[in-house]
Length: 275
Picture (cartoon, rainbow, N blue to C red):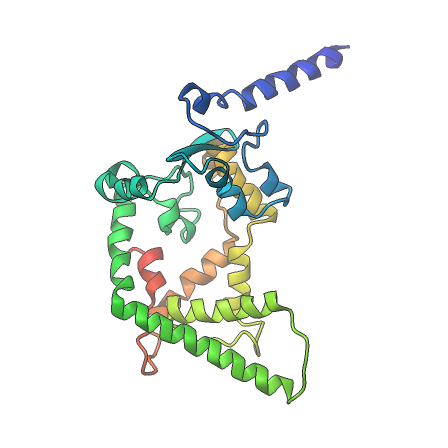
């Protein structure tokens, strides 16, 4: 008998809690994408009806004549900036007011992810940002292009050899995944790999696990948004432990990579480690 009335009451209270913040933009007379209870704007992403990029830009196309619009990530309100002039002011003139990220990811449990610019804030963010800037000078970008061109050229040469003069079928997603991995590994870590002929190489396998946001890593990343306090209390890490351990142990290999006539200064080291 108790469950007959307790369950509906609990569901109602949960619903009221999930929508409690959804009047944020209405009170401020700011146009916003109508949220789905609890999920906010990201429901269509969870159901895979829309790509993440389409979900993020929904307000931009829905309200083309406004400078900003509102979005909800689950229960959390956020602003989507439409006006490039306003964005420039935020990025330059008022930059100090818009640097921090809301995150409970710690260096202790996620040494790689927590050092990324996307998951740091305050003084640490400024330290990493200033350290990363030298990796994107004009000369470094030209060197990066040379590495991308070399990776693409090598991949095409291997495909020609593999075809043996005959037409063949290949999954483009798999091709681009391997080509992208080789280019990013060369640029970021100064290591040359060949994922087309050696798909079991450590960088490709670990890269796939690093980019994997479904399953357990996806649930833990979602937890940092829904229950950040509990995530921090449980001392969890988002990435797979073997990925963090592998990348950390390979640091010496990245920093001591041999040059082959092209500058391979590993840009990612500046971003992911305190040098």
